[in-house]
Image (cartoon, rainbow, N blue to C red; front, side):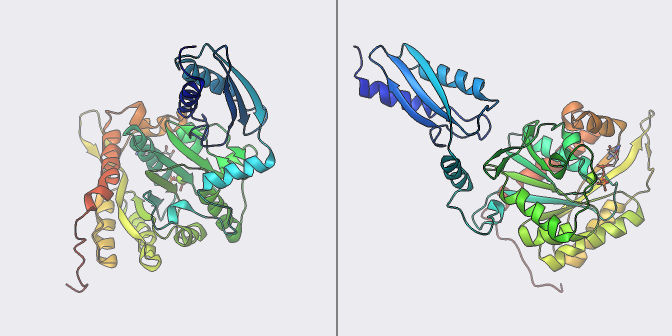
Length: 382
Ligand SMILES: Nc1ncnc2c1ncn2[C@@H]1O[C@H](COP(=O)(O)OP(=O)(O)OP(=O)(O)O)[C@@H](O)[C@H]1O
Ligand SMILES: [Mg+2]
């Protein structure tokens, strides 16, 4: 024999540690999935692997990943894998591990913990139909394309259009009572629409909404996110209040159209932040203009709404609320949304995509740009 068995053993374990569970995206060794791994006299490695659920659809992927990783270890002549299924107890252990601690009574929202480095943006508007969901999915896709780890919560319990717009048609899977969110374009998505049959309308009252939102935040395994975006329902209702309680550190991103009436209600939605002590990160004006074939701009919904909201919120809140971008009207925004392929990916060079991309850049950078800098807080009443 060339290498001592113990050395081969160590190398095999190291190789197994490079294999991630395709769904949970953490090493199978860390997840307690490797029950045993033995190197035989003949150099054949026998791995006993515990799946989280029986009939796991990702079994084949695991098999090929493990075979490739272990097969590459020198001294190994073959790999045999035997699949088993975790016991209820083992699943509970895994779940506690995924939660990052022991089981607790009150669901723990990782993003609300003091040390959380996830930036949380809640996309809000006063009026419906101004493009919140379109903005949310495009920002999410743009941020993921920049290499960030991104999650989206469709908190519009009644509207739930996010999964379709992102093309996330997968169903969440369960490991005990943790929920694995489906992914599309590198974005993890969870929506109430994924838990209801077909297109059934959901009629839920405040406390149930609160519970649903809490579950989305606490029981979904998001992993280590850079950015979490929440698509809120229009207005200043139950969900906005729940959100302020569950995620006091969420920052509000206000979407409006250029129209004066829309701007007024958007201001109100933004001003709620004053009561909830949440920060308003900025305003996005959507449907700003339509570019005509001759290059001129037709201002279908008027002009100035976004700037008006930004100025007025700056006044009310007493902190700078910038206008982050103006997104023109473009039929491709809608088409891309209908196809589940956000315009920032489908038509990255379109003016709408560029505007959305610039907003994404600012949202991605903001935290770092504040690092080590004084916040420059001044007493109010300049
Ligand atoms: N810049 C744009 N250009 C063209 N169409 C757009 C643009 N932004 C949004 N739309 C379209 O306008 C409609 C409303 O947009 P969206 O659903 O994103 O708004 P919303 O604020 O989330 O609405 P709701 O209040 O119903 O949740 C959609 O059909 C969408 O495709
Ligand atoms: Mg919407």
